[in-house]
Length: 439
Image (cartoon, rainbow, N blue to C red):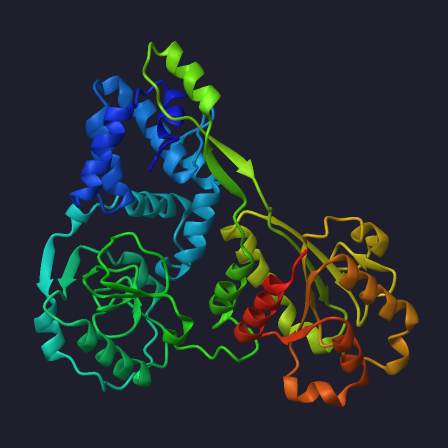
């Protein structure tokens, strides 16, 4: 754990040796470290011996744990605003910020989240008492919380549900799910975020159930990442409400891009320079890099309703998972070229696409419906060449599957390229089909 930390911190002239790593590990084992803020405080106490080290230590911490690099002359705000970490945080926390929140306030809120420790929780509530006063059949009034309410909420309370059994929690959660109609945040009853409900994520519920989202507090008794626990229709064509479920389906194409291995020669070399203090040096061996080609039909009114949400989906994917993503456009069908811009003014020959790495995952997005004469021999041959070159390829169709058989061109394309509904479930099936293929 944290094997590469000594090397990174040495770049900032902060000495971190094996003893420091062992102390940090012991702190984690003794449950003294639950959040990033805890790591900052504990590690600071271990390695910072002089007040002059605080600045370099903080820079090293942001670089190693948050991938926020401060260049010469940068302010901390500049480095944060430039970072991928802040962009991801902002995307995940838009519902907590008002429309009028300025940049400085966002940076402050980001830093509050990064440095939140489990000691910041000032009051521990009795979860059993909350549970006894609640019921599973409460009607969802579908109240929309204002952005102002979300922005000003702070998480300073925790509910302890350790006196309840796992069976009780699961049974009550199913009752609540049957009533839930909308997203909820900050409360103690619904499947939501940022509250003290025993089921949800991003809140403070000891020995509760984490449903979706990411951890951080390490309080959950059980993690339920299965999307059946989310109140969304997985068979519905993707929209603003289920785009995150579709994103979860796309995660299935992520493959390990590197393997960490002990760099023995470098470990020995640097250990000798340190006078016999050997700290493991780690090197990354690149394996399979995730590469995606997205080809969207944006030429007709029938596709207008889906283009923005598709672009949002793959943009989120690019933001959250480091990989190569190339986007191209076409109208109705692909002949011998596609276009690199949404206005379809910059042509890219298909032969150029076919020279790319065959390990690319290729997604066509379109309704595949057009006049029969438009789908000529050149177009069909192009699809065959794409299928032959790119073994992991799929067509995502926003038209309901029951209508596909009524359109001749849809059935022709479907015979060449595997076709799936443009829904979270359809994307999941497409990804599973891709993963079964062998290069």
